[in-house]
Image (cartoon, rainbow, N blue to C red; front, top):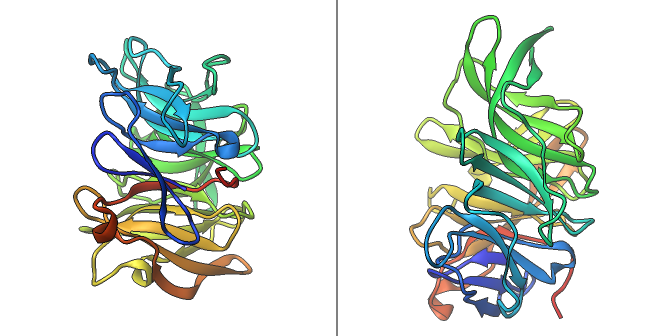
Length: 309
């Protein structure tokens, strides 16, 4: 498991014992969002260059930070979110282009080759509304996440309905080549709902995500095929502190997460089970890490299949 740590660092965590395997400070200006690359050999991170500029994607040896490689240009894209593929040496990311500042989904190989854009300005999609489909267009896309088998990508999108000009946000799933975009979750009559931490359960049947609900953050599980939604956040908060930065295990029915806290907090885990179209909490919350003992908090955990050697 990889997480953000103190300023300019990331940390590799043993997901069973909760101990730090390595704390790494690569030669970048600061460490933003982090992910593990295919086979967990490389770390993927977002940072401006040491000399300044827009955030770009870098990769480095996961355990040491060595062999740093910049794979996107700070002059072309302002990168926001990243996710490493579980089945190939590919990265999916969201970024604003430096010409029009449109925010969209892209993919690229870990070595910086094979870049391709996957969502486009004013691209048409249909939003389900009761028994009808409403025509809409994409005006921005962010927070991409690979499915466990690498065949699909989920992401959040800003949409505008064509007939009414009504703007709202949705969660969309597309195939790994960018085709077949389907709106799978949408809250009617609420324009400013932003979706975060979109991830898949290991069976590929559910999307787990967070969203605003009043003044709080709510964690929900969406059954991808049927649209059935389960609320999870009441089981996950600690002393009424909201959940933040959750991610699902690729090998167990477990969710890891932290709490809303400046600079990060301890990581917690909680078990779930699948009952038909519902995902239900099945095991009690457990604290995984001890930030007081190691002297730093943990942010944005990303959990990959492979153990680091």
